[in-house]
Image 1 (cartoon, protein in one colour):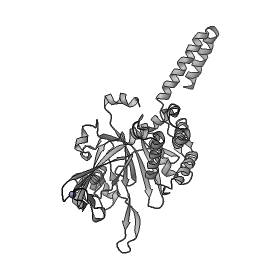
Image 2: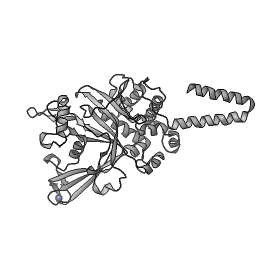
Image 3: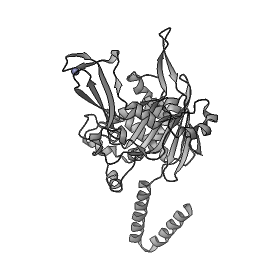
Image 4: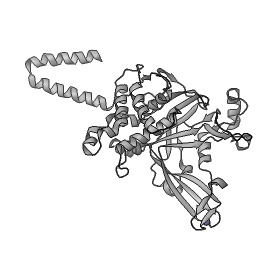
Length: 394
Ligand SMILES: [Zn+2]
């Protein structure tokens, strides 16, 4: 490559002695070529140095950087927006994030960079916002996406930010009063969705389980009934009876009545971030003390074609061009509630390989499925041919 470039340069020099205009046009050509290359630039595989409790940041960043959100952020020309209505001091996290991405994308494969500046800037703001210091990857992602969304779109609505265009989805809660049978709806938007861990028992086993039983009982102990992401989504969208603590005030009955609640997806995002609730708050029956527990059970997940059709509100299905997702990344959590380690697994789209990022260590892997450590899933909506054009325009 370098040789080719040198040869090209040499030929330019030779020509320049005779033809100045030709030299100019050659330079122009070269510039165009460079720009073209930049447009289709492959994001390198770069390790992120652990600067002390920073693996939760690294695992989140790797997933964002290697998704098409990363590409869009790299190309976003803030100057254009700044001239319009954004003030520079109000987009500090976006600017730091973009600077980090630019630095990252200019590294060579398997080199290492430090997240120090980015972490310091974010810590300042985290502290100001008095957010919890739990150092959880999910919390960090929520903070980062919320913050960038707010910075890029301070006035909200009308012109959605890059974050909203890619990660924003909607759910609809249907609350039905069991007395008057009226239905109340509530729409909520999300950047990530937290789903409960469905613990499969013998009762709820599927036909496939016998196959998995023999295959996985060796690795996964006495419980061969492995839950899937679809099981967890089913539980998330299951109708529940609201308990006494959460009784709904019915406007028609003019009092708190017994009611049911069911949640559906009403709008799907381009990238769906599923947060598996492996950490649950438990109350000790005797002492009534509250403590946090981690579910270490394995989870099975589709790599391709996760369909959200049956978890959607029927009326909203036709507005949705597609509801099939492919997996593009995972954040793993190893360890317990107090102390643990995060890593990222990412699908490199140019090679189709799965890459493991463990702080500054990078290797190619065969993805573990089912997995005891998979904690956050990044699913990308499948595109239809005509949509790919549209995609390029924002
Ligand atoms: Zn009622």
